[in-house]
Image 1 (tube, rainbow, N blue to C red):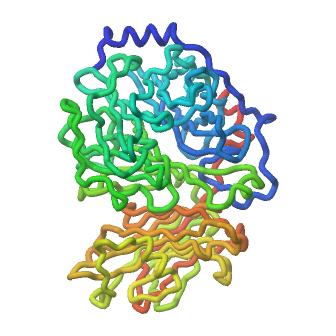
Image 2: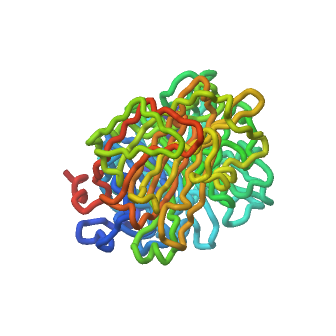
Image 3: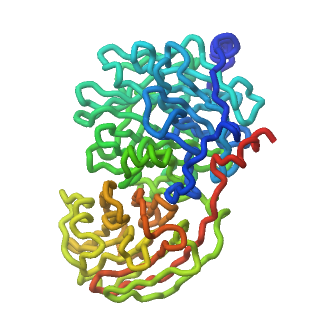
Length: 574
């Protein structure tokens, strides 16, 4: 661990080497108000009152409070040259109170913009941040910042280290190809490590840096990992997961009971990919089980990018958040006055097969539940549906499981080389198969003119069965000019042994779905015009020729959370 002698230079810098950050305070008077009719603003997903937001930055737990920072344009609903870090706090990851702007572009080392970064808790329970600044010469550099007052659990004010940048642009790297430092981990040799995303000649790179005092950083002789042809890696994340537990792991844990996850955002594709592998800090060697390709595992096979995880020491779990961008136009965003939201927080752990991660909405969502509806042992014949009544279909959490018989009748599919998203697009929710499509029709109008279909199909190949999960947005809105892409991915389950489960969070304009107990996740943005408020309906359906049995179904209305609203301003001062 870090010694007192090692910490001394850093403490001196903390005492003498920082200056105060300019802040913009969100007060009831300064909070902008959205246009009055906003049917697509969400009820229980994180978003600011107005304007543009994107990446989650520096999420952490400190002295009884959860902190979430995020990329923010305080001047309007579109991405801007000058980006800031906005800041909200919570006691439950559900209800959020907005605070002052945490980081603004004020100094030569971040003069143009303050881009993404991460939080690290140093020995002595001292939080610090590393973030990417775009300096006055338009170069991406890495900067250090710390709270002004550690006795303030809300960490309202932050100060920048006057010796910034602590990491300069490496030789041979383009000025705009070096960003997004990770949470640091501390090895037994007393050195901190981080990675920073980059590229050179289309080779994606995770540059590795080491430091004994968190101020003076040196690049390791070789990157932690690199893959040709993948383009720039941004918003990287590197963390351990237990091989034998669903609990979370502190970022600095390294032993034989953990595997390490390397997640990278491929900017050229706007998708997050991850690898699972073995890490040895002695020789700084990371060996993934499977190399990164465009067919590599993803957190989410829909709209889900720039994700960031953190370890929650109170509930002993790792939490995952991501930016979910809009599917409408910039003109639409200007008209409504906002753009972007965050996914609902997910717990994340290594599946027992050690081949992939599993994700599940955090349990705190249950504090918003009311009006439960249940169904058991409901058979759905070919072309039938069952409306789920007694809940608010406009904002709901629904779980259901399907049992299939006579699987030997399943259609054949050779999965190797097959793009599941393409299969879902060609075989949409209206195209009959043997087993499938069956699943949910979310945000549906009464006549099904509008519907977002989340469904499964089951195929067979050489004695084994293949489960395909799809999210079909093609009929999600009567509006034109929207991105209605259909998403799809395979689910690693055996329908002979396991029921096929689906959980979906529906919240006005976002539909987050978890198949196979969270093995496959798909997030979609939709903008219904008919299926809004009390006119929204929710159905379980089967459009396959073989019947399916709903063994159990539970759905709950989800009440509106208090998220960055005017009534929340001032709560942090109480």
